[in-house]
Image 1 (tube, helix red, strand yellow):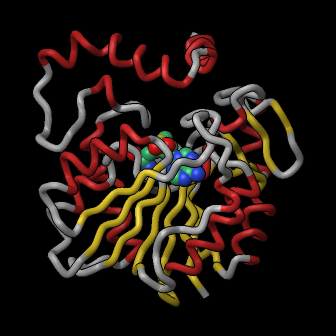
Image 2 (spheres, protein in one colour; image 1 turned 45 degrees about the horizontal axis):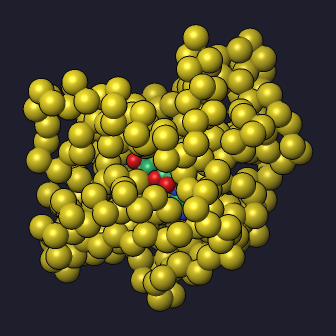
Length: 275
Ligand SMILES: C[S@@+](CC[C@H](N)C(=O)[O-])C[C@H]1O[C@@H](n2cnc3c(N)ncnc32)[C@H](O)[C@@H]1O
């Protein structure tokens, strides 16, 4: 049933998906009390669950793995509609900096209007790049995109549920750009669906299906390729290494049906340290 609904949703043109969500959640949004920086449910196009609680949980991981301080310079790649930014508003001081960018204009506009306008050290940029789940209004490729920041600008970079929606050439370029904009020795925290012997074995018994094998990666939906992408472990580790990162931790999630590691997350997490 869930996978049928998902296929139906993906079958809608991108703009219609946004309108469908607004409509479905309208009754809830009319009456639900929410955090002052939280968007209405119908505007949240970045995944289900408790928007505020998920942001807080990941913020604690970022503090732990990224050794954050209130003065940290932080980069949120694929910043969506601000889920990860909210907890940082109570943490970063004015010497700190929070930069986000995303390919969906309405998410970036929301973040600038509701977060950037109140916190001068928070800034979000719309980058018109093609993604066949999120933005089909352009043909510009993420594989050629140069991040709008100087070399070694940042102390910490993260991507939550973003590389799970990107093709290999795009991912390769992003790792190279992340390496360029991070200071030496600093961390990139990124989530993935990683295929290794454990996740592949579990997936066969069927909790989440990536059925379309493309070599280094497999797809969940062949028509909307970037709907969900799972990468083979060796490929990702080699790509990270080639782009100047050491993988210091691989924290398994439960997406395949395998037993998750201690964080008990859905997606797998890699901690990448700039050499
Ligand atoms: C599942 S959402 C997650 C959003 C956010 N990271 C969060 O956890 O709330 C995936 C996000 O990645 C963005 N995205 C997809 N391709 C991108 C790209 N090439 N560059 C930057 N953002 C991208 C999408 O627009 C979307 O906002």
